[in-house]
Length: 274
Image (cartoon, rainbow, N blue to C red; front, side, top):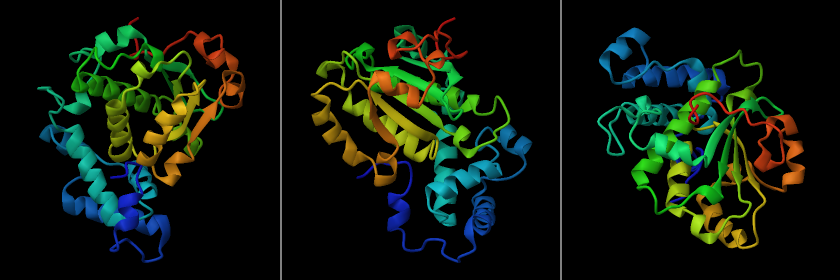
């Protein structure tokens, strides 16, 4: 099964939305489908239900882009995302959408410093999630603990997208950096990769603007050979192998931490211990 940010399932679905009306028409159609599925309505009514959250037009458009204006499929995927956010998964008694620093295991992962969100943004205004892969030991935590941490980081980065008025569509996406400097094969976690890709595909579609693989060692060529087929062609184009001295093409030096050749040590609220 190919995992991606949305597209393969849509391409295989022969009952796609093809009336030629474009995104505006598709948005209306997905709204009608959402109402029929019970996932759009008055925000207060849905908050009180404790189940599904209000779906705004920005979210509808994002899912439509992910699934090539296929309104029924976009509606189905929105419902899948909403049910996931309202579920009690990964060994928790709380809802996925409520995962935070106080959630079991999250603070321990934050304390490793292996994944942080920077307060500064990249050159096009995207929040930056920085992962130091060398600090990850796949044997230290359970898959569920790591997934809770991943959910917390993605929700934290998504929250940053509402901090200021969005002037450009690019600012609705993340910049994700995997720092591969000094990485050993023992740091590579294929299971974690699959879970991250799955979450980006189904629960955060069209959120990843670019993924930078920085300072990859020679052996990572074989690792990438395994991971690359899990992504579709559209997502693969968002992945770039970059040397540290070329990161300035994406992120200014004063917006990068020292381990990425920059001068910024300012991390986002909610990403690491204060």
